[in-house]
Image (cartoon, rainbow, N blue to C red; front, side, top):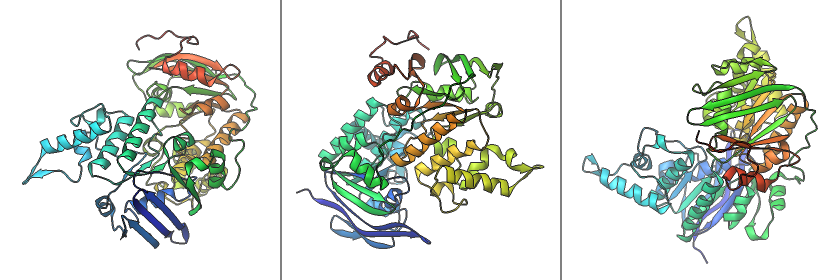
Length: 506
């Protein structure tokens, strides 16, 4: 029998009249991976905040290594051996990896910082997790995947016995995900207890030993992962069967609304050309770093060094800044919702109205009634879980934050909507709502560019799929001809039989 690390019994948490957690129980043993599963708003984030000392619980008990705990702050939780690696990395870009790993607890020799010991300790833990960069590298030079490794190294450097991994692979490529699986298995072999939060069922069944499902703040299912199926977990999460996640697309394709010719950036992408028709969903697929997001930012005027030719509805479109694209009727939902899509310290209402303030104004003054009306309509349409329109965006779950960011654009009546990883980090129920929204948009005559690392999304929704690799547009598939194995092979460079542009250095 493995040693019991953590026991939660009857955990309750209330925010005023809202009962967020209702008697949650949890058991975690040493050398075990527990998948914490639930739709956005189910209570997962609140439970993590309680375990990491960010918020106190109201009732119940936490027993860690046979001792009762009530963490007063994050430092107390860390001292007890609990560390979290979050989906959204928070780091100091201008500091080195070692400085970020030891931030707030620098090693000292007398009154001076002990730099040699810090770099030695940081490098040891980096070697342990297989990092390919050194402790002296500046964080600003690291990729998103490497930043996640720094977060993990920070946790392991404090000799954590329990590590919480919150959507750790949301922005990783397939190769990086496989590497991450190896790290998780290594931690498990070293008797570290892991709470693994993910909306990707293939990941859950690949690495987890047990599962715990939350719904509406309550434990609705728990057990061994080998004794359950994806369908059973989905039913526990949603309280219903979800037989058809992807809605049928019945839109009629119309005239060309966007023509992109020879879009090029000196270092990020080269000679990207495509057309987009009214009522069409155009998928963009590729591994992380393929240049998809950079291409979309160039269309929006966010990549100033890009060159090329844009036409909208047959007329030349010059985009020098995002306002030019927005005025032309192009909306853009970015991949990083917290840093680029919304303002966490603003309310839900103010975030929804943010992109179109002039549309909600009378003679230069913001109309509170118009702003409230559009906010209420988007909350209902997207089924955003929030107590009021005045709730801060930071107080919503990740999936509901994403819905707010999408809803921000819909009141502007755009002709083209660019969705960059729109379901990143959200649960199956929220994904279904986003898919339905995409289908509704094209049925109403909008054109959608869907950038996604989730291959089933583009296979099931897109009329056409463009594949990018290393900054190049390397293949295009129609819905009738697309096959998952072919798309993956082209995206990874293993198959060039469908390549329409020879691979050259960008």
